[in-house]
Length: 483
Image (cartoon, rainbow, N blue to C red):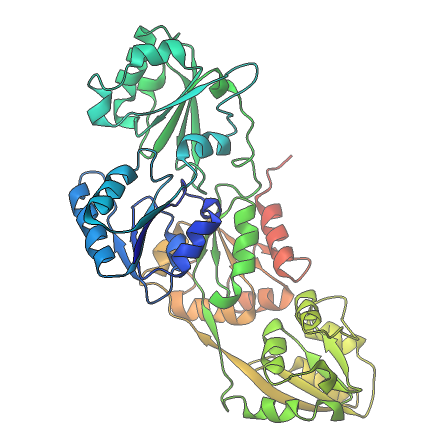
């Protein structure tokens, strides 16, 4: 039994330490703060209990109750991860929790996290130290109990610190500014107020010590005071999709690549998977049988990553293809094949069935076509017209997923929605309706766009390259400022 006091970092899930991720993966219980990044909870096993003890403003959870909870769960013999925003020992009350565990004889481990005191200024493009501007920095709490009494010597801070980083100081910013000015800091001292630092919703307000009291701010905010706050080395807020919210409709198991690419460019993503990938209606029997006789075919045509993965579930050796040639629609499908040690013999210049039919040679042999249950007949009919015998085998089905109770409200607050297939369009419309669409509708290719148009959905952008990367590039272009 061990209780792990784990620093979750200030918000960006990528700032969680490797040790923290390892412990979350084996946790029986996760006791988490309000400010912990919600997606981090997905790193814990589905069976792990998740206990929210977040201290939301106006309804505080007594620290003594949290201490008692950690002790009680630790004594049960459970593996407990106490996930705390920032670093457990930097204004996180981790010291109090560690004391309670030590006094109760419960083993514990402290896993440091990246503190907002250094990460948030960095994400705002502000170095807390700079060779010509600041050789020291001080971190101080501006929480009500400390800001209004003598626990903090603001006069000394004004004289001694080159850079002052104030955490939890929004409510008392006027008094903090007044005390620092009384201690000798000029009214024109630069100040940066960073709200929701390191997250997609980060916003930086720049002012001066004299103007701080008049700036409208809401927590959580990190204040940076000093000459370095006058620097604007922005990178996080300067990314091309920063501040944009994009609804991702791809099947949840396949959404990670799209989400990662959008997030890397600054977008906030909302995953509302409209489809799920399910087994074929016959449980995969026809595909299993086809897999045993691959070498009898002249061609095996694969139209999606899903088709590749479903077929290779039944193969133990790529040599099962024998003399059969392999065709792949789209670079994603070709990459998935390569991951199994097979290089496509034919890949059309564009990722649509029509392009493959045009590129395919005429013949009179046999073609295996494993595809989705509801796939368009264009490919099979086109190959038949070229003289081939075509065995169409159902490899998987796309079924409607369940959206949250109010997808309309979620989509209404977004800037864009990304459709990655025709099935995501039709499923979205069936589940949420045509009114639940953000201003920008992006489609991965012309087939998906045509499906949207057929249903009266105004398509804003269509990816030139019919891939996830092409879809991301199209969104970047859609939001690029006019020259």
